[in-house]
Amino acid sequence: QKEVEQNSGPLSVPEGAIASLNCTYSDRGSQSFFWYRQYSGKSPELIMFIYSNGDKEDGRFTAQLNKASQYVSLLIRDSQPSDSATYLCSVTNQGGKLIFGQGTELSVKP
Amino acid sequence: DTGVSQDPRHKITKRGQNVTFRCDPISEHNRLYWYRQTLGQGPEFLTYFQNEAQLEKSRLLSDRFSAERPKGSFSTLEIQRTEQGDSAMYLCASSLSGQLFSEAFFGQGTRLTVV
Image (cartoon, rainbow over all chains, first blue to last red):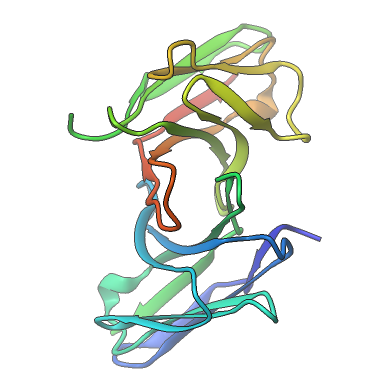
């Protein structure tokens, strides 16, 4: 079992739709959860973090965390073509080790 | 200090040669991570440091890979006797420890091609 697993992509949504990205993790001791966005040929950049159960909203982005189910998700509302990228789910453990899932490629069609 | 810096940006080497990459983190960051990324995959954890201490190295990582952070500032990643399978983007990231939320900032990466 991989430590962090994401939906296999690519995920294609029309412009203006909601994109839903999912992630599960294996270590129950994981403390913090992050979503990074990576454009083709570029390095990852942070878009959301969450460490408490529930929802966290930031503009068009909502991160959801369910520690009992070991599940993290990212919703992107009103998706734009500029949101087309690979989205990486990542988690840290108590020691600060940061690991990533394999990423989900999102394509937003105009 | 404008961010995480990696050098070189590109490296082409012949199979069997040794290569060394350098990472300069954001100056106040005490954590430093190394990752390897191939096309279509997420960053694969290699190792990480807190100050000069190497806290963990991936069990999947060959003994040909070694990393150091001698004074708790910059870090080097060395690959000995390179193989074609080592061809990848090598990413370095740094962060500040001691908080639940600590954003890791990435460098631009070093692209290694083994021919």
